[in-house]
Each structure stands twice: as C-alpha cells, then as structure tokens.
Length: 240
Length: 316
Image 1 (spheres, rainbow over the protein chains, first blue to last red):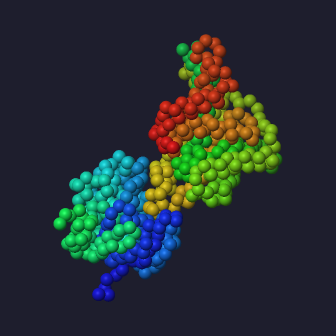
Image 2 (cartoon, rainbow over the protein chains, first blue to last red):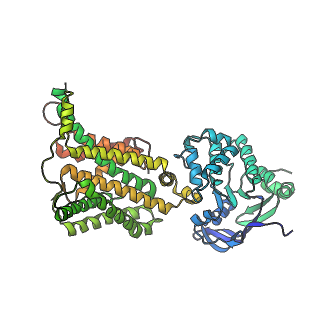
Image 3 (tube, rainbow over the protein chains, first blue to last red):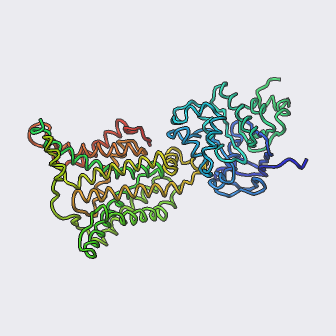
C-alpha cells in the first residue's frame, strides 16, 4: 500500500474572504495518477478550495502540502512555478492574443522547450492547430476551454486544477472535455477538478469529495458515490 | 490646383498637423499602456515628457561647454531617456506600488500629486520661465525642396520635422515588433487583457509593469524632445498642456489599445491644425487660440457617442 504517492494534501483547511469564512476544516488529497473531483451544491465552497490552494484568499488555519512541502502563504506567482497549473472557470484565455500566443504565455515560467510543447498540444487538441493564429476571443466556448487547458499544460504540471471546465458548454463539448480530461490524466498528470455536472464528473473520477456549506460531507471512489442512494437523492437529482 | 490650394494646405497645415499628431501619438502610447496594464489614468505622464525635454536641454548645454558645439537633440536625449526611465521606475516603486491593490481613485490621486511634485522640482532646478531649446530659424530641408520642386510640388519641410516624422515611424515599427513578436511584449498584451489570469498563468506581472514604464517613459521623452524641437522652446508647463490632447488621443483610439493611441494622436494632431485652415472664406475656420478646444471637443464627443473608441478599447 505504501506505493501510493501523495501529490497534494489539504488538511483541516479554514479559509475565506476577509472576515467571512467559507471553508470550515476541509480535507482533500490527490494521489499520483488520480482524477479527483470536488462536487456539491452552489455555495459549498468548491471553487474556494482551488483559490485557497493558489493562495488567492486568506487561509486562517490548516495546511496544504504539495509533494510533502507546505505551500500555505507562498505568493500565487511562486505557487505556479512549483508545478500547480490552474484553469479558471471563466475568463480563462487572453482574448486578444492568438491561440499560439496564449500557449506561449502558458509556458512563461519554463519557456525552454516551448516549441516541443506546442507540437504536443496541437496533437492533443487538433482543432487548435488549425486556429493557432486566430485570436482566442474569436473561438467558441468549448474551443476556448481547450485553449485554456492546453495553456495550462505548457509547463510540466505536477497537478492540474480545473474549475468547472464544462460550465456553460453544450452536451457535445461537455463529453469532449471530459474525455480530454481523461486523456490528459492518461499522460500522467494528476487532476483536481471542481464540477457542477456531478454524474459525468463522478463517471471519470477515481475519487470524489462532496462538499456542503464548507464542510466535507461524503467522499469515496467515483463508483461508490454514484451507487450511494443518499448521494444520488441529494446531489445527483435522482428520485428513488 | 497645387498653386492655389496644395502648396499652402500641405506645407502650412498638413505637415504641421502630421508633426503634432506624431508627438501626441508618442505621448498617448504611454497613457494607454499605463491604463491597459496598471488600470489607472496617469496624470504625471506629461511631466515625464517635460522632464525628458529639460534633461535633453541640459545635455545640449553641457556639450556646448565641454565640446564647444551643440549636439543634435536626438543624441543629447539618449542619457535623458535613461534618467527619465529611472525616474519613472522609481516613482512606480515608491509611490504607485504601495497602492497596487487599493481602489483606482487612490493611485490616480497619487499620480496627480506626482505631477505637481515633478513639475515643482523642475521649476526649482531650471526655473519657471521659458527656455530656448534650439536657437535660430528652421530652414526648409533643401534636398526635399529641390526634389519636390522638380516635380512641381514644392515642399517646405524643415529638417526638424523630417526627424520627428521619421523618428516616430521608426519608434512605431519597433513598438509594433515588440508587442507582437517578443516575449515581454506579448506578456504586456496578456496583462492588459486580464491581470488576474496573467497572475495565475505565472506571468511575472511586476516585470511586465516595469517594462511598461520603460516603454512608456521612452516614448514620453521622445515626445517631449520632439515637441521641444518643433516649438524650439521648453517650459515647465509643457507636459501639462499636452495632457489633454494625449488623453483625448488615447480615448479616441480606444483605451488600452496602443495602435488606437497612435491613430487617435494623428487624428487629434490633424484636427487641431486643420481647424485653423480657411475652409470657408478667407479667415481661419477657428482661431488658432481655440486649438486645445478642438481636442477637448473630440474627447467629449467620443465619450458621449462611442466611449469604446475607434479600436474598441475598454469602457469604464
């Protein structure tokens, strides 16, 4: 059992915006090779967990470990250089920059093998290769999401954080994004993903956490949670 | 046609309009960059221009004392550029950076205070009066005059104006290259798009901000020196006087859009000069005394009818 390598551990995390505390002791861990989802109702603090990891909000208590090192209170810019890649939910591409320029910006912290990485990304996202010279702002929502993901993969990420990657997308693009998430994970990148589309998210996840009102409510493997009657009734919109 | 209309129009209105437009364009670049990347209207921008011109004048005088002749202002401005950029970076480090996360109005007020501080310092050092920058009458460039005369279109353009127009074109090309083809230039556009995304992408935003002051400061000093070459005198209020047309140019082109600023600068420059052309009858359409009113009118009209500017910039 000791062969499981922990990538990131969030332990007893209390955090929020200014005086308002949103997370009241959250525990989350991501192991090597895993896709882990955070699901839950609106206002549960799902995205706030990611913001806390990125040091964008005030952390009152608790620890966040990346590969055994505590990263609490390290400024955002340095957290990125430590190998955490992040795709925000909205406003996640530079709209006036071309697709290729967006990817180049993604490689800012480690620009040495930008050309190799660019080729890799165009293989992973063939649509983007055709549109490399177009401004990212001219693309559709689904394609923008692809650009945002490709941009975040331009560095050798130790872990990829995705904030609701399928929000506002059509069902077709939603499935495409989920299969892309699998593909990225298949290439060896652990993923921590916040999702609204709970069923589909659980379908692709190794494990998941259900947050309610800033507390851990349930956790388990994707399958376990999908089969759990109470989880189904409360969070997946199932009637029985 | 050339005799009746062209000669007077081109030489006395079009060329001066182009020259003024170039100067405004260079100044407006700094304003629009600061707005795009640091998100505030920098009132002290004109003072960097003015300080650059005073420093250049000082180096001209130094060269006369030690070398026995006046260098060309475009050579004398080189050390002035470095000093002015150092000044701009220091002001940012000690006066603007502490307010980076404060509401915008606070940093705007800080820049307003900075404007008064810099101008007063210049008045303490160089005095409040007008100083002659370059002596003598600027004669038309004889080569261009002869060449155009042979084609029956006599162009009377002083060499200083040729320097200003060519210099501006070269700076624009270099600037365009920087924004579209260099790493730091692309990062400047990225931060201008979204500072928050730039931060979580790992872009060193402070480095981009420093680059912004360097580029903006360089363009401002060039604008100040070009202005001084054009009018042949400098005074401590020259920066402030340029502020309104430069803001008008930045807004006209679309705030945060560097090439919009260039376009806006040219339009304002032309509009100011051409407003004095006798379009109807014999007298000027508008007395030259109302020149600055033209920039102001364009500014107001743009804000009312198309606040995003020609190139669709940001609207606040």
